Image 1 (cartoon, helix red, strand yellow):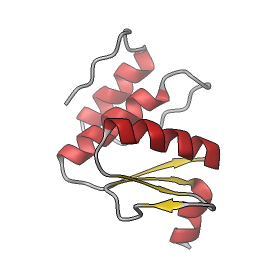
Image 2 (cartoon, rainbow, N blue to C red):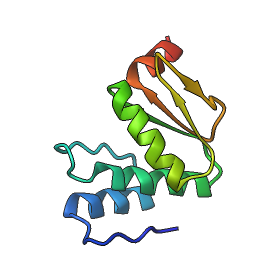
Image 3 (cartoon, rainbow, N blue to C red):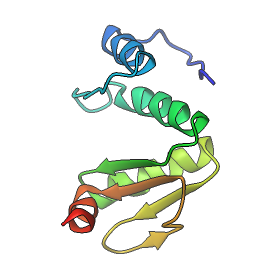
Length: 106
């Protein structure tokens, strides 16, 4: 399951992964391109191994589209929901904008 990377994980990534392994909830906040997706990929892979469904949210459509492309290359069953497009909404890994998730919840 663990994906290997051509770089050493930063301390915040190592800490987050350790917390995930211990069954704790994790909130990762870091600047753009800091490596938050590494933690997300790990959490998604771990959840899929446990046969759980995953919702990954992003603040804007362009980022949802980017993550959809990236996750589709990494995982098998990925869907996308933005205000403009819906692809495979019953997918095990569903990427959506926070606006769409908020609308679904309320």
